[in-house]
Length: 270
Length: 264
Image 1 (cartoon, chains in turn blue, purple):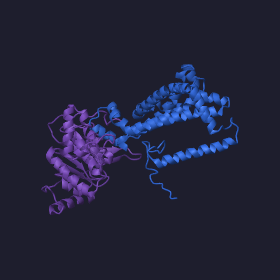
Image 2: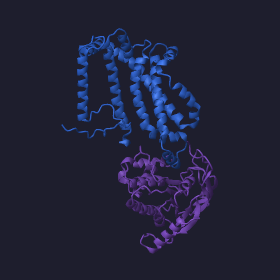
Image 3: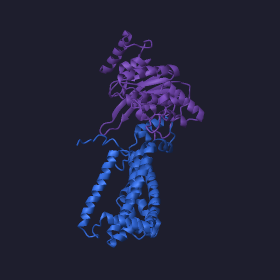
Image 4: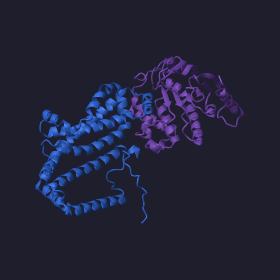
């Protein structure tokens, strides 16, 4: 059989990375489905040799998924997690992009904040749980805070780098065409020029924040993450996997939707 | 990261039309000894005149271009446009760069309209002006296209239209046709002369291509290197349109080449 690799590297998203779903390439889609089927087969075979608390079969996970869904537990957990994910992501992304653009554009702000940024950057969001509890309490806001911290740093660095990468030449053109000051320049030249980098950061952040849902709910706020942690403690591995699937599906949904938006916004790159 | 002096400078006096480059020097503080890029550069461009600036590589053409455009400060001397000292970028100069530098996220017409949006013209006047400019450079049918899909020659036409849209007193161009193929370059040169004839703009055109300078200019400012300075100003007394086969054309080219090649 001839191997046709043509068109393999031509499908690119705004970030230049070839990730995510490709619904418009049937061959690639077919291979993807084959990969999933193969993985399920392997999983099934291994699960035959293991007790359920080590590795349940795919069927057991499917059954558990439907049970949780049917009982309403899953939808309630998901709704709760969305209440953490959405505000956390929106606030963290907004502040991260804003700070990244401002600190990168303004030499003064950059000088002012650089040591602070380098000190705070290595702190994992999980390490801030104490602050989340102290400042917000064991509630939705506390969980959202953890997620916001994660979103902030991803977007901060993406926006900072994107603004740093804006060509000086475009700024020169802007000044010669009557751009009236820093605000006008940022709005009319810097932001649009940095948009590919900024949206790549947002997209990365959207995914990371679904991962952070587990961390954010570690201290007892209900949600998908909480269900996973509780099921782990009780060795209900089928339930753990069922809820991991929920996170994966949410990630996929958000990622596909955002990529569509990204393509639309960056149509000039196509 | 702001412009040289933060804000664009206003140039409104009209008593001494044209450009005067007066004793401009530029010294860079390198790691070791300071580098003198320009020394006591003086020349003028009359209103409506087409002047080319040529010189060997390293003679500071681009540095001088940036100083004139207000994008870099001179160490000594000053540049005056219509009698007013240039202290920063101004919309009284339309600046065209070698690598076009179109805004890739804007369509052709949005690029052309960029400077107009910052003028006090009404929306109707702006739209009309964009139409005129697109017509002038023959890109009306590409108005909705993004720069990515344009050829080099088309991009440079857009850049010229964008620079002219705000109706500057001076069109300042830095090797604008250096990045396109020879055929396109000749076409763009003819078009530029047409635009110059129809708009009556003052043009200062930097190039390293001597034949291009002789094709275009009323006068050629020939520079010498190390440090960058004016070697001589050559009048081009050849009727337009100029043919490369014309003996007078060849003589001018030879004269300018000799000046560039000659040791100080």
